[in-house]
Image (cartoon, rainbow, N blue to C red; front, side):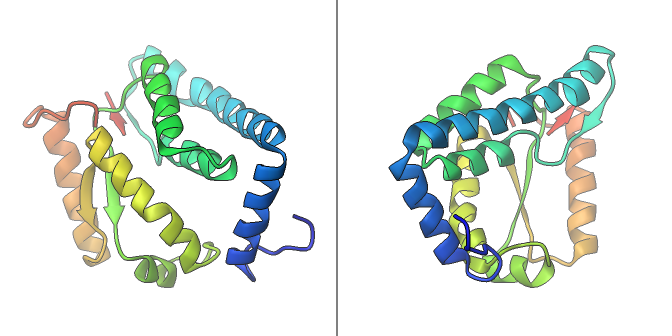
Length: 174
């Protein structure tokens, strides 16, 4: 992994990371578990404790993003990834609403300056969409104007808070 630059050449970086994970699968999984453990400690302090105090929370990404990145790092299958998410949904508070702002990778890349490449986004988008279908995320068209995305998001959150729709296991927790 030394000498590779994920921002300069993401495809080479991803290939090198995959080769390293395949060559040393035990270390890749240990690394991934340390990463997830650190994150889950943060979730416990920043989400579980306030929820126990009855606070209403709006959380950016919750644990879905971290688990997806960990799964890609450790070359986990979709089945293994979903098993981890299912376990976490049994342990931590279930979100009432999860919103996924979906847009083409090229559009997302043009809007954000902290993303490695379009390939990085492409690698994740279909996984997020699969996750959305499996866990009932509410999808928002990310190609809308930012003010329209905000308006739609607020409308969805207030409708969910008012109980106007059953969300199932769909990241607002009040």
